[in-house]
Image 1 (cartoon, rainbow, N blue to C red):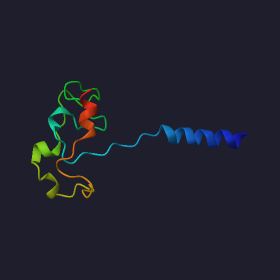
Image 2 (cartoon, one colour):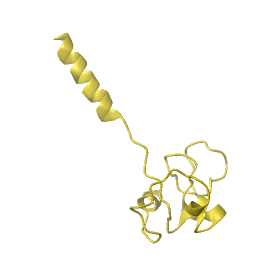
Image 3 (cartoon, rainbow, N blue to C red):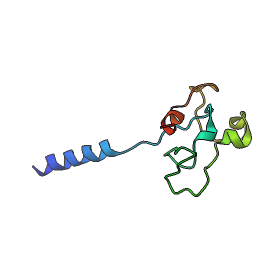
Image 4 (cartoon, rainbow, N blue to C red):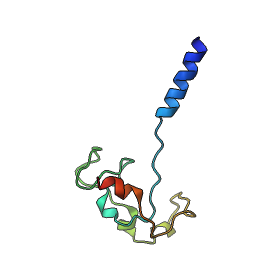
Length: 93
């Protein structure tokens, strides 16, 4: 009986775990989203307490070739520069 409860609890905890979202490398409208945390809040309504202004995406600060300089630790093999971002769709709600 006790082992069944522990197994159920472990499954419940694992199912409640939220993975971090994939960071978009080339969003089409980075100015619409705050990039300071994994919430990706709309720029007009910041809810994470990250301050009074939004955090800019690296493409806004460094340009379209921002991935070429430094080791950012991203796997760039599966994303093209013009791909639409699902985060912007979520932020526009």
